[in-house]
Length: 270
Image 1: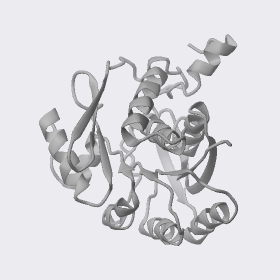
Image 2 (image 1 turned 180 degrees about the vertical axis):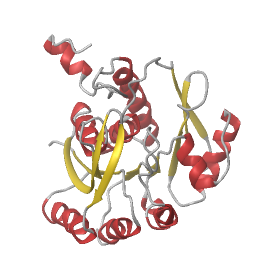
Image 3 (image 1 turned 60 degrees about the horizontal axis):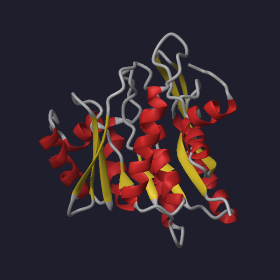
Image 4 (image 1 turned 90 degrees about the horizontal axis):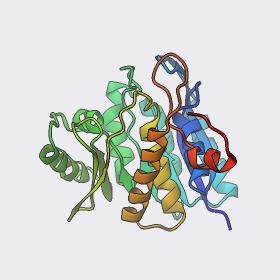
């Protein structure tokens, strides 16, 4: 029986991030992908130029429609830009008798600097959704925004993981891609820190890496992996996707979600 994962996130016009990246990542990692759209963004490889939020009642009804009919093995939550959207998601998820593992990527700012989460919604995100999360997956700037202090080295990244754990999630994965050197991510379970290290890929085309990684983790959890296995396999997947990223548009191109599939098909996209 095929495993199924649900993404609750915003839509990306150019398909490199958001629900489009999530569903690609689900598919590439062997699970059936479904989506609840929280917002429609106006964006391309050069930046984000506008957001239209979906009515919170419609967000809640989308979630209810899925769970009324289909068994969900994992949930990924991405961009939720305002308090009302967060409350709608929390309300719907709290009604589910047996909530599947929630992988929460606290998307706050786009690579071009566009605010994807309103300032007043940050505390609501922490209060309502962090305690529901099996794991949260902030990058360094997102961790800094949540905690209110700078993270400039691996020791501070480890401290941040421990401090974030106090906010309610079962696991915390702090992504170290914004630091110098190898790309090292740190997973904290409340007792131990586990590092996942891959060679840094020298490319500008990293649009949607956070969405893709968190969705790969969700896919792996849906397939029955434990958290360490899920993160390890997702880290390997995103590294290959970045290594073979796609030159698209005039700005920051997307990762190559289907590189292995394209290679098997003899289709060269590089």
